[in-house]
Amino acid sequence: MSVIKVEHLTYIYGEGMPDATVALNDVSFEVERGEFLGVIGPTGCGKSTLITHFNGLNRPTKGKLLIDGEDIWAQPKQIRRYRFKVGLVFQYPEYQLFEETVRKDISFGPRNMGLPEEEITQRVEEAARFCGLSPEMLERSPFELSGGQKRRAAIAGVLAMRPEVLVLDEPAAGLDPEGREMILSQVKEYHKQTGATIVLVSHSMEDIAKYADRVLVLQGGEIAMLDTTANIFARADELVALGLSVPEVTKIFLQLRAKGIAIPTDVYTVKYGRDILMDALKRKGGGQHA
Amino acid sequence: MLRDITIGQHFPGNSPVHRMDPRAKLLLTIGYIVILFVGSNPLGLALSTVFLVVAYTVAQIPLRLITKSLKPIVPILLFTAVLNLFFVPGDAVFTLWVFTVTWQGLYNVMVLTVRIICLIAGTSLLTYTTSPIVLTDALERLLAPLAKLKVPVHELSMMMTIALRFIPTLIEETDKIMSAQKARGAELDTGTLRERVKALIPVLIPLFVSAFRRADELAMAMECRCYHGGEGRTRLRKLQLGGLDFVLTAVCIAVFVLIGFSGTLWGMLPL
Image (cartoon, each protein chain N blue to C red):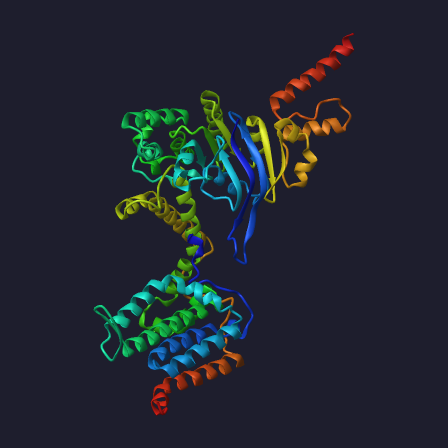
C-alpha cells in the first residue's frame, strides 16, 4: 500500500480574495512505501506547497491527502500524529534552532511526542550519530556551530522523531560540495537502515539522479511527469523546455548519441556512464584485435 | 493568518488623492482627527462621514476595505459601546434588571462609534494612498526645522523607513519558523495561556536571531554604498507643491472649518 496518497488535491492561496493564486491544481499521485522520490520543478511550481500538505501544515482547498490510507483531515484535532509520522525538513532548517544546547534542540521533537526521558536520550544520540555530530557537540550552543553543522543539527532534530516518511526541501542548498555530499549520503543511509520513505525536493539534477528511484516533475501546480529516474532523464528536451535540465553526464551521452554512437539514453549517473563507455570501448577494441 | 493584516497597507493608484503631496496629506489627516473631536455633534459627524465617503470615492479605494481595517478594533468598539450604553446617567429608555439604558447613553454610543470609525477610516486612507517610503519622506521634511535643535530627524525617519520595510519580511519569516516548529510537533494554538506563552519561545528566539542577522547584513550593505547619514544627501524624488495640492487642501480646510462650526449650527437648528 502506498504510504502517501494525494487525491485531486487543489490548493489556493488567499481564496476568495482578489489576488487568489492557484498553487496546486488537481494533483493526484502516490508515494510508495520505502521508495526514494525526487521532486523537481522550476521555482514557484508548487513544490514547497505540496510538501507542506504531507504533514498537514497546509489544508487542501479541495481534494484529500491520505497517509497509510487514512484521510489526515478526518479529525483535524489529531493532525499532530501525522506530523510525527511524516518528518519535514524545511529549506535552511538551521534558522529554526532555538535551544541552549544542541542536545536540547534535537530533543524538542521527541519531547513533543511525549516520550520517556531515556528514550529521548537514546533517540537524540542516534540522530546525532546519523548526522555526524560528535557527542561533545551535543553540549554546545547551536549558535556556535558552523553553517554545515547547524544544518545537520537541525536535520537531526527531525530524524530524532524517527519519521516513517522523511521529506526534505533542498537540504543541501548553500553548502559546499563536501557538506552537500555529507548531508545527502546521510539521508541515503537513513533510508537504507530504517527503510523509511524519502521525498527529496532539489534543484540539483545531479543529486536527484544519484539518489532518487522515481522522480516527480511539477510545473505550474500540475504534474508534468512522474516516472523512474532513468525514464525522466531520457526526456531531456522536455525537461529543458520546462526550464529544468539534466545531469551533466546525461548531456554528454545525449550528444554522443546524436553523433551516431550506439549508447542508451538513460545514462544519468557517472558510474553507469563509465560502465557504458568502457563497454563501448571494449567492443571497439575487441573488434580491432579480431 | 498573519498575512491578513491590512492596517498600513498601501494600494497604488493614480487618483488625485494618490498624487497629492504627502506633506499636505499628512497635515490634513492630523487636521481631520482634530476636527473629529471638535465637531462631535450629529451634524459634524454626518459631515465628517460624507467627507470621508467622498475622499474614498475620489481615491478609488473600495469602501469595503474600511470594514477590513476596522476588524481589529471591534472589541474596543463593543467595549466602549457597552460601557456607555449602561453606565451613562440620564433619562431612562428602558431598564433591564440592574442595567438602565438612557437617551444620553444611546447618544454617546452613536457619537463614539461614528467617531472611532471615521478616525480609523480617515487615517487608513492616508496609508492606503501613500507608500510608507513617501510618508516617512514627508515626515522628515515636515520635521526638518527640528534638525536645528539637534534632533536627528533624518536618522529617525530612516529608522522608520527600515522598520516599515521589514514588517512584511518578518511576518513571512515568522510564518516559516512557526511551520518548522509545528513540523516538530509544537502546539502553538492550543493549551492554557501559560502553555501558549511558553510555546512561543521556539518561535521568538529564532526570529530575534534572524532579525539581528538581517540588521547586520543591512548595515553592511548600506555602508558598502557609502551611507553616512543625512548630511549632504540629495533626493531622487523631490517633493514639490503643485496646483492640485493647493486646490485640494483649500477644499479640505473649508470642509474642516464647516465641521468645526457645526456645533454652533447644530445648536441653532430648531429641535
